[in-house]
Image (cartoon, rainbow, N blue to C red; front, side):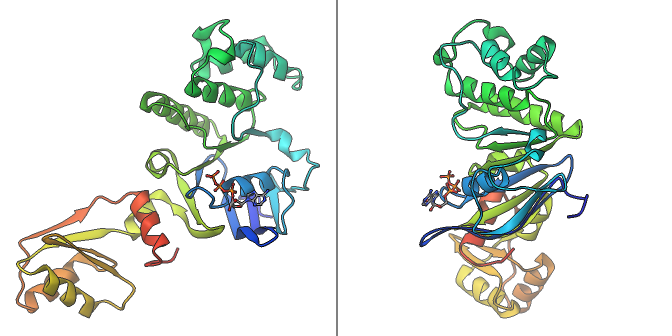
Length: 304
Ligand SMILES: Nc1ncnc2c1ncn2[C@@H]1O[C@H](COP(=O)(O)OP(=O)(O)OP(=O)(O)O)[C@@H](O)[C@H]1O
């Protein structure tokens, strides 16, 4: 294991009889980054996180966290990890502060000041003594985050942390995670909300049916899948001309009067269309997003 990575997973697999929940996933998370682990429902995200946290025994593969191998159901390295998975377990009849006080018993270093700090950090300072059962979903998520942060972990592992939050809440959590990363904390965050993750993450891995389809910086992934939109007098012929200059790996779609082209350089497209007697009247790049990247990868038009 290289010290370069806070978390490293090598060739992870998890089979539940005939269900291949995770099929050869390797991950490399660097210190101080916000890493998004993205994919649709059932892609294998929670299973992977369960293996990272030593809660699920991998069928194959290995995991190291801060250089130590994670052994299923027996881990000391995870003391440096704060987690939030699914619905955070909390005592519904008690206030946020009381929930934090109870968890604080597990951490000798956590004092009353730390509890107040964490409450403020997640925006729950002013809810005072309201019991958690009166909280909205977003407030419960905030408390879940506070519980994860209480022990001042170096690595945060969050499974769908913004589920149920409104746009303002999501924005606040984004700022909070960014702030934590700037303090040197590492954040591993799983989600199916690709738009949201595009705004938070430095790097992402995209999974589909238990397999990694892409891993890289958000900037790289968006750039790699750039699309050029072209308008000509004859979209069918324009598409056919574009196909002539490709090697078959590009993605060319007719979209009304436009043709959307991925995998070809804009100058090359224009030159070939003009040579073919079809001068474009409009040529512009389409702002890409992770959702498009995922859809393209899912269709198997490109491989990560
Ligand atoms: N204990 C289990 N036994 C059998 N199959 C399981 C078990 N846990 C998960 N699976 C299956 O493994 C696959 C991956 O599930 P997983 O929960 O890891 O996906 P996910 O990406 O976290 O999905 P979601 O976003 O819906 O939480 C799914 O097909 C799921 O049905």
